[in-house]
Image (cartoon, rainbow, N blue to C red; front, side, top):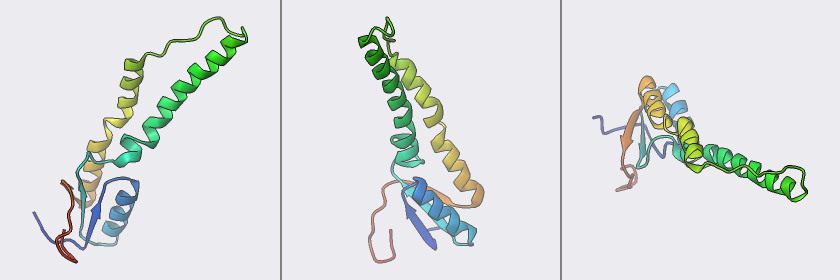
Length: 122
């Protein structure tokens, strides 16, 4: 593996991927290092999965409020395992999709924890 890069990006989230792709488009040699699955917090553990979970909680909350006023007679039960399975349908593919995207443009993906050992050395 080439051990010298023009740009080394630490983290494979949205910001890191954007920077890496832009640098690569400009002809720079790029590596992206992440000690977690490629994709970052937003796509895998934050923004996107949170929206699904909050939406489901909102349905239950709204139903409870309507039931309190006898507008509906039954509050639906949340099926947590099915909700989590649904969430994984869009989070599970992200790491492999990100890896393929990096490789397709010539970015070197590195799984591991980045540590600086000098002013220009990771």
